Length: 347
Image (tube, rainbow, N blue to C red):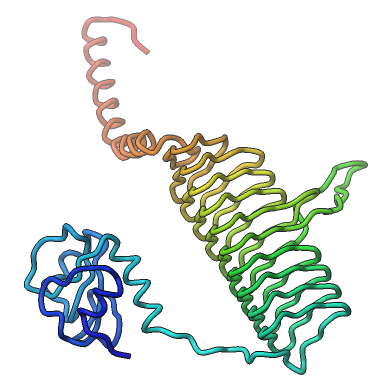
């Protein structure tokens, strides 16, 4: 595929600063791009590469400084680059339309038009799969599961009984949807398993990363709302609610019955105690230990999690601790000498 720089600017609604006649045949990172490729700069840390890159054109913000390179100025260069990736990178179908002869389909299932069901897929009884959905090899779907239209379920995903998956959902390899929640009652010297009677509901346009686990509710529903994006290796416990367009980075753990608001951003390896609420638009720093509810629009980090600027000041103070201890020991020594000289008792 080849597009002129001017045509790309037209598609994206940007303006060309330089020669727009050259053809673009591919995309690349700014530090690796060669002639004929399009790149982008969306972070000031990468401004230094403007002088060395071989890219034929660079997507930049409208206010980016003047340069002798050919630029396409646009409001959101990162998003624009993603849109061009959709133009240049078309993934070949990995599963043929239709049902593979090794797939096992339960009784009374409804499989929509133009679905693709790969090798060794197992689908339980009374499931409903929407049209244009792709199910990769090795997927296991329990009974009474509903999957929407235009959804992609990658290899070796497990979706247990009665869960509901929306439209345009991506579930990456190895994810487990609807495993039992961690519920036990202690009596007579041992733990007794509590029946996990609920399910998981994943709304439209959600993406779930590889080997992520989302537990079914003890009663009711564990809900991942529309547009949420969940990274690899995330644990979401029973009865959690994740709000619309919230993003959760890898290795985060959400304990049971947490309610996460809309547009929340959670950094990697954050941990949350159960039964708390995270307000809309909150920012949770990586490796935070969240022990209580978080108001909307807050930015917290650290362990225990606290306002980000407070956490930064406290961390900065800790780096000075050895020097402060040294000064205290010196002052104690000087004080002792003075007290001894004056014959004054001291501790």
